[in-house]
Image (tube, rainbow, N blue to C red; front, side, top):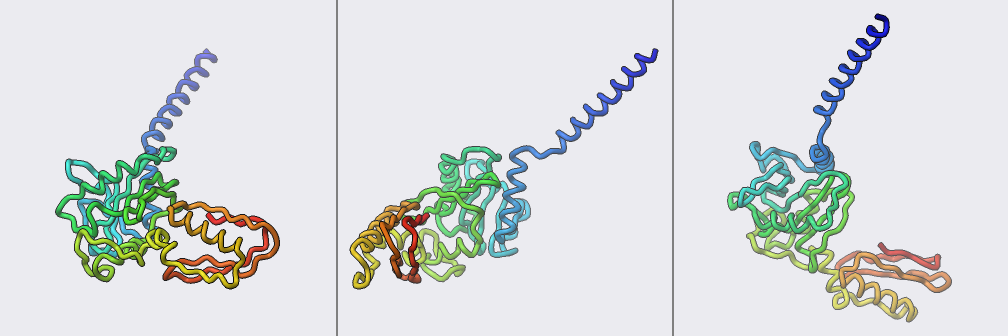
Length: 261
């Protein structure tokens, strides 16, 4: 009789525990939902206003992110990004741990499928993000050679507007669809033209310095985002690397090796 009582208590406790686990499992967000929560938080920190597609108000702020935005063919973009009332990009959300490499092809498809009812800066849309809320990558179709790259967070709406600053008129003034940014507004475009645009002074530089700077410029012009300059010996004063229409960058190297990433 005593043993049966213990078994009854054990069975009751096990039943309560199982019920608690079921309730907990039902209340826990899925990996996709958790990614959306993290992405929402990042967007808000970067100055974006998040809206449902049933509550669109593009005049609510400079940067609006519409969730589950409708596209042509019945597709949906996880987020449609609008700057100054016009569509400028998309975000494709993936669960944490998902490999983002290759997802930019899907984002590119979404960028071409915007409904005609939406005003837009360019068609296809120039900016595409893929994000898990922990890891984010970005492709700028305005670059001379568009290539996805990792970011710490999303750009602010004002930053995307700067990227669009050459669309035939001043930022936010309603440039026509189909324009293209001027080179001065696009850093990567300036880097691509660096060898033709930049004229460095060679009077106060050693031949090894000139060679290092020229090789770095070739690397940047080829859209290579990592470079290594190795100094052989000694202290090199006032080594400089600069781009056209950009502030001069002057630094002193005292170590044998300096990494430019």
